[in-house]
Image (cartoon, rainbow, N blue to C red):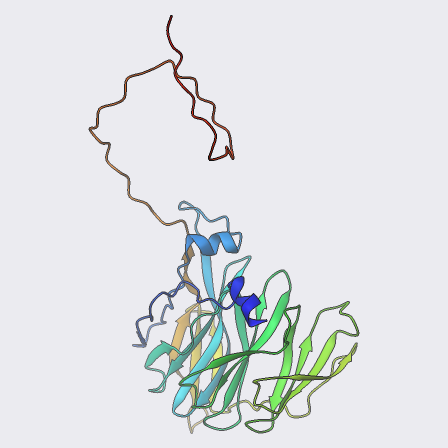
Amino acid sequence: MRALLAIFGIFAAFAQPTAPTPLVYAGKPLQVDAACTDDDMQTFGLACTTEEPCPVYLELSSLDTGANRLLVAGNFHTETATLSTILLASEDRGITWTEAHPRIKGANLDHTQFIDLQTGWISGQVIAALPRDPFFLLTMDGGKSWRQRVVFSESGPGSIDQFSFDSPTTGSVVVDRAAGAEGGRYAYLETQTGGDSWSIRSVTREKTTLKNRPAINPAWRLQAHAQTKSYRVERKEASGKWTPVASFLVNAGQCKPKETELKEPTSEPTAPATDAVEVFQIGTPKNAKKATPKRKP
């Protein structure tokens, strides 16, 4: 399974050859760089040009706290394609932000749950024609490091509808396999290994609602802010007032072809003209004979 996904590049880092520079919040919304490559545009079928680049948007979907660490998760996307995940972390209550996990190409991150200050999970799935290959990011050190684990042993359609952990090792998940899935749309799975492996317990046509849903941290929230076109991370004060501690611009960049430098003409002598007759064909075999010049009588 993992070898197959690696072949198709599903879990490859997106436009991130080196570790990004940490972002420092100073009262103005931060922009998380999301520039994409020519290969990315080809992979996602983006018709972007230098004159009309494709805007890239940041979408943040969850906020949680680990050990002395704030975490926000989401994705980058254009109007037609999901480009990659994004997971940002701050260890100084929102001032400085770094990427806590490499971006996962063609996927998004949804919900987060910490069972204690050290152990947490983030759900995600690959976004293609239909959501597929649901997975989790797992941490056991408060979000300092993460490892990725798939839910199913084989690749296939599905997205994580809901999940819940009762302890660092036991948990359950409901996967929406889309309408028309064999045996039923919703698969209910359990883990005894903290999410490293999952076992299917039932498949039904009706959605199963988990009894123990992840609790929302009442002291923090993630809000879309229309005036600044950004997502704000806010902390609740003792007075009940919500105070922004960081914000991130929705407009994250653009996709466009890489600009190439124009080469200056060379002063090399040109070859003498001949009456050569050449035929150009698409897909001409490498061993095809070259055209030879006509001899004059």
